[in-house]
Length: 154
Image (tube, rainbow, N blue to C red; front, side):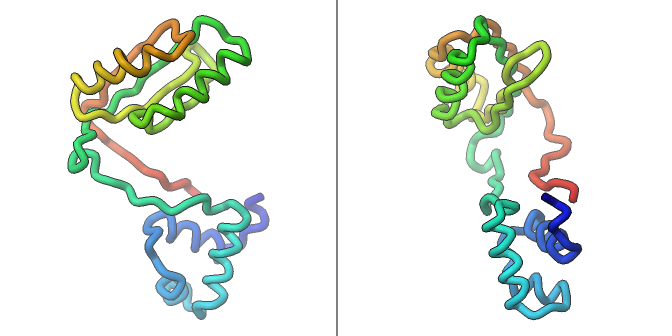
């Protein structure tokens, strides 16, 4: 699909990845264009699905979610029904920020943010453990955030 994007489209996407609050007028000024064509390009990029949504990235310490845990989940059974049920159930756990179905030694990797270790313990004990078919759960805790980015290199 990217072959349909020209240099201006890519530049608009790069700008919006860095700051989604940039207006069409501000982007147009950066690109030495008028506002209307930039606005139309942004709307087209949204309609075509290149831009899925706009978000605010929060400071996890200020919102008291400073403990990041990477949780590796291995399933007991690997039938389609068990995998789909796990995927459905994990959607309802608000502590899970990201979930990836993996190939390799583990079946799923979860990124979980909680207030503290006790909060994580309660999450595992009262929520995650309620999901059927989890065989092995391996948790590792982030000591320091080195790089975080939601931007794609395009």
